[in-house]
Image (cartoon, one colour):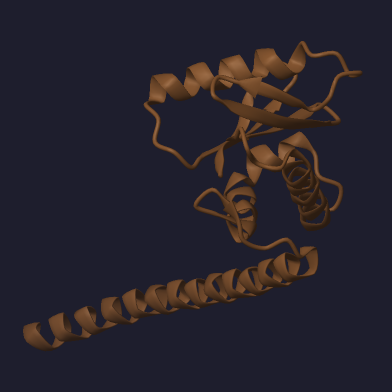
Amino acid sequence: MIRFILLQNRQGKTRLAKYYVPLEESEKHKVEYEVHRLVVNRDAKFTNFVEFRTHKVIYRRYAGLFFSVCVDITDNELAYLECIHLFVEILDHFFSNVCELDLVFNFHKVYLILDEFILAGELQETSKRAIIERMSELEKLEDLLLRCFAEFKTTMVMLRFVKGYVEIIILNLFYL
C-alpha cells in the first residue's frame, strides 16, 4: 500500500503531497523534510529504493523534480518505479512537456490525474490510454460547465438590466 506520494524540487519545496494514511500536519512537514534529505543526498550510482522508518521510499528524479513514493516494506519496488514513470508520462502528455511551473499553477489537475490511477493508496489503473481518455472526458465536461456558467452569468446580467427597467416603469405608473 502507498503511504504517501511527494513531488519535491532540488531545494526541498514540496510541489505535490498526497497522503493515504492520516498524519498530523507537523508530522507531514517532518516526513517531507526527511524524505527530501534522504533522496537528494543519495549518490546516483545507488538504487532508487531506500528504507525509511518501517517502510521504503521509491524515488526517481526527472529534471529538477524528485518523485517519491513511500510504500510497505513488502511491496514490489519495480511496480512503483513504473508507477512513477507512468505518472510522469501522463503529466508530460497532458501538459505537453511538463515543467515545475505546470505543477504549481495547475495543481488541481495534477491531483485529478493522480486520483485517476491511485485510489486509497492502491494502484487502480495502469493503462496510460485509459487515463488520458478519462482526463479528456473530464476536460470536455469542465469546458461545458464553464460555457454554461458564462451563459448563466450573461443571463443574470440581462435579468438585472430588465429588472431595472421594470422598476422604472412601475415607479412611473405609480406616480402618474
